Length: 397
Image (tube, rainbow, N blue to C red; front, side, top):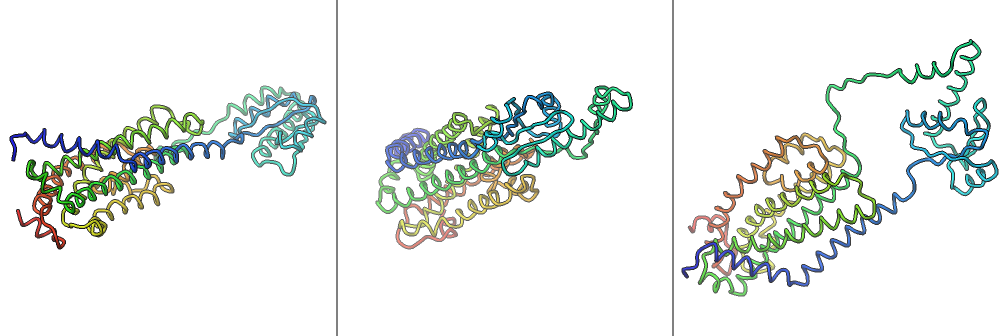
């Protein structure tokens, strides 16, 4: 052993991993492909939602006096529509060409509507209410009353709703961001964790580990490798996440508040780091038990299954039931929290105490994993040939 202190040794090993990985063509291709996929998703979402979400309604000159009451009635029942004045013949042509959803003709006493094939249900409700209000105004006038005062009294009538449990609002954009976050963090943990495992076995196979362990201790080598590949993974995740948000904002397919968007990115990065440290330590430990690349898949399967189970549960349950109590409990367990908690945070359904408990749990587990993995790795990394049993690697120390 040299007189080099542990921090310097770990730093040198980490630097070697960072430089080697960043120069890798596979890393650049994977990062670029991921960015292009997110940009493609943003463009497709924009094109898919490119048609106006509102109803375009034309009014002939005789029906123009209805503009105010139609707009106010639509607003009261949450139907989004736009109105504009057109003459009769031009309006019918625009309805036929699909430029107008409907054309109102007639006057305030006789409302008629022209459509291409069928009347939208929302617009039907609006016009039905307008017609009923017109009939009511006529009756009020016939009785000598003031229709304006009656309308004001009706508009002022409201229903007071007292929810026992305040509703949690999760819009479609939050759901999309949550799903993309789930996929991204799962792939990041999977690829970077397996990179650690493959690197460990590659060094054993090529005997490089024997040269390295002549100057550094096994636990220093393991930590340096984990930290180095973690930095590379962090760079990759940050680039992909920022590119995705930028693409969503640029195309107009993402309308979440900037604070919410970047909060999601911050949580994603934080949970990637914590999840990566936990899983990569486990990957390094189990990979040190084997000596050939073809044995890596079987060695890491138990750890990999924990990662996959959390991801599958989250992606299958949370989109349909963001408030699932089952998923909420699992997200507090350290082995599942890296894949479940970021999605729940993106959906905005996590109380502050749950976020704190899940963070505290995985932070507490990481030192235990470090101690366990360092012992297994130190006792198994120099043993070649047949696969070393975990029990034997643990007891050898």
